[in-house]
Length: 399
Image (cartoon, rainbow, N blue to C red; front, side, top):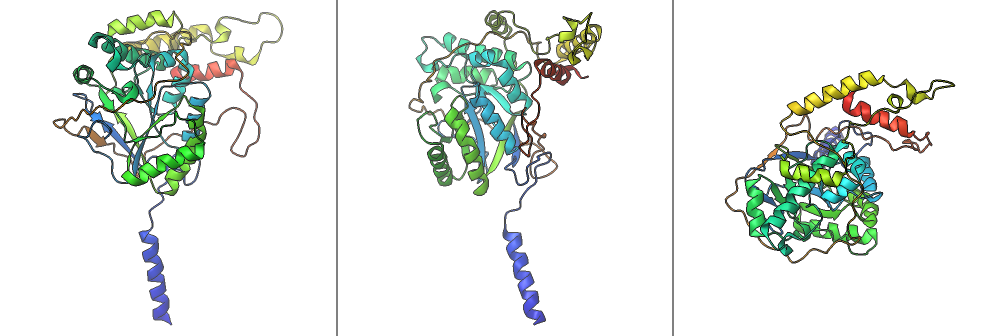
């Protein structure tokens, strides 16, 4: 009897150890969230290419590893919903942002950065590089895109680039190499620009992933349907044992002064992030009951904080950034991907390294709840504009 009981215990132990371990994600409020399985750092020297649809030299993903990428944003509502879905699962993605869109919605792209996602670029206006008349026009699209996105973010971004329609040119590939900017194609195209139910979109992505076993997934955060499908996709990835890989860059991109200045014309003098004054420094109650927001720091203190921040930014390796424009518009429907162009990079050394972390998953900050709801679903008061402005101020300059 005792021998049989011992054998049963040993058998159960063997089954338990054979099951995949459920890694905890530090700082994540949701038990058993998808999280981040691995964070890698990419050395972009020489302009390496990633994504087997075009660049086959570097294969850094392990079986069951997935990189989530989103193109063409930011966009009101859809990008915000994508961010909420990623935060719910405590996971990370890479956003290939269009310059005009970033300048049009700086508050949204700053939320992307604040949430810890990686931000690359996708040209200035989504023009297909291969269809431009001269290499100089392609250079202009690339550099304006980097200057605009960095300007809108108000901080460093990654030297990561994805060609519109996934079509490169030899001249553009060579130029990106001289600028030490990595190029990203894809392994799994979600084709989320096509009208289809969210469930069908997820089914298509999972079928391709199950066939390849891993890969970089291409989606677009400008589509509401993608935002609806993302929670379903993340749940399916979790259920099937896939792990998310978060891409980071060894060094931030260095923009070109000529294009930084050109972007300022598009910014039309709108203030840079952190330059906003607290309301109390502009309007002060001198008779009657003052509103709560007037309890903010005096203007003199705010100026001291602003001076300290300016000095710190000047000391940084990158040049200080400058304003944000009125919302720029793009065609409501972006061009569908054209036929792939192969551009292998056989001589490029592997630039990817796994970033050391305390556990098997990357440490992720606790995502903030949106106004109006708690984890239990109870309503909470919405924040006033002045309160939100104060939070932005404190985020960048401290209390």
